[in-house]
Length: 248
Image 1 (cartoon, rainbow, N blue to C red):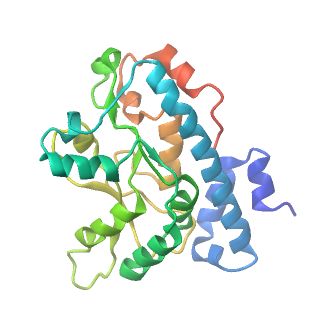
Image 2: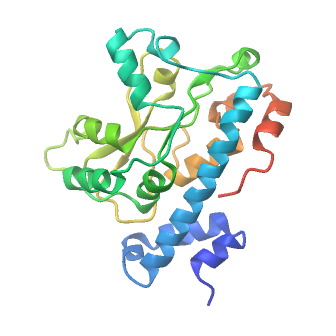
């Protein structure tokens, strides 16, 4: 019987993730665990390669990434703005202490789904927040963002449950679409800790889907899932952005 990894590499991307997710906590048991972990890491290797292609392509198209001292940071003090820029880079590879950071997150709130832990270990962090002069008619682009695990750890206490009988904590994944535009925001897209499955729902994100499928949607729209809601999306730009991206 073919392994989940070999099936994934042969193109059964969505099916493999669906089957592994259906197994729930059983993916933490051998021999499933090694196979599931390999799928998660292979997926994130592809995600990272796609992100590293998207960033220069966006720049070439004239996309303006939000940077220190302007745009979404304009309401911050200079010190807050500098800190935000350092903590939310356009792309940052995994931190040297990523394993320690994951352990600290799990100690504080509960185990991470394999998908999120693999993202931290293989991709790191990404922040495509910005704007394009020719896409303004499309409204909020809700660019792809996954904050670094260090920042997620610092914010972890903010996302504890209000229910005293529920000890579930949430790890913030990204600011919501309004904060990304510098218009305040109602909270973060977040994932519940204590989930032993391979993947988990991305709470409060408007697609109401899992973390992995959120990444799929983002890549399908060139890192800008908000373009899905655009009545006249930039078809040529999207074709250029997504050309040759690896399926996940």
